[in-house]
Image 1 (cartoon, helix red, strand yellow):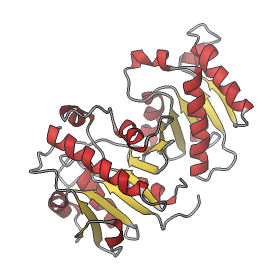
Image 2 (cartoon, rainbow, N blue to C red):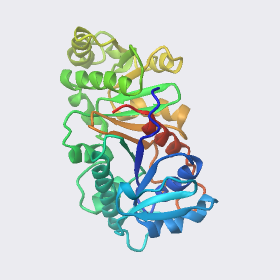
Image 3 (cartoon, rainbow, N blue to C red):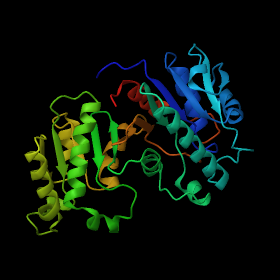
Length: 326
């Protein structure tokens, strides 16, 4: 992967009541050489700092140009919107604060070509309580950047999966599997491979139904939508095959015989990935005009503010953001 470690990484702090503040501080203490800026509330971070078990200087700044990249120093753009932190549960206040951090962080990243965005976990329930109509980071960032063609990708160990559909009820998925949606996901998989410096990527597409539909016996989505999209992508010069039975394709990906698996729905891709890389999985949004990564876990209210949260996934998200090509 190309070395882009001079990138400035802008981190949004995440839900102040969850593990975001803790894992941000822990990760930046592990990654001493990172050129990082945190957008959040400095009072919340000060309260969370002792849980990292390391001496940390939180330095308030108002712009990227004021950042001081030194060992033990964490630069913070302080929004001061959290108020008294209600810990370990979803609140409207936490949802509003989370959205404010994301909006400001995305703005800072879009102002400079040498910048990447890493987002700490937020709560969809908290966003809903705050009246913010996005199901998650992916859709919010698409809106903030004016992006209409995008996809969620997850990376963990040898697996890279990209999703045709994301946060929707399983009963809605078959109706959303269209030729255009699948083709878009394949194109974005090829783009993601370039961002990750993978030359001539081997992309494969999972079927929706058991045995990839068994020639139409178990559903016709593979025939009508998926196979036609694969043929379109091949005609464009993309190295892709499928649809393949979803119960076998991940074994090939685990053996590094496949670079990216295009998955039809959220859990089809995330269950195998989290099984092998739960503590180091990274979420990417592909299609944005900026690099964006995130740890592949949630707010973990059940263990928040106890000092026990692992920063492993956040560390990997920052490392990937530093190296990725936009």
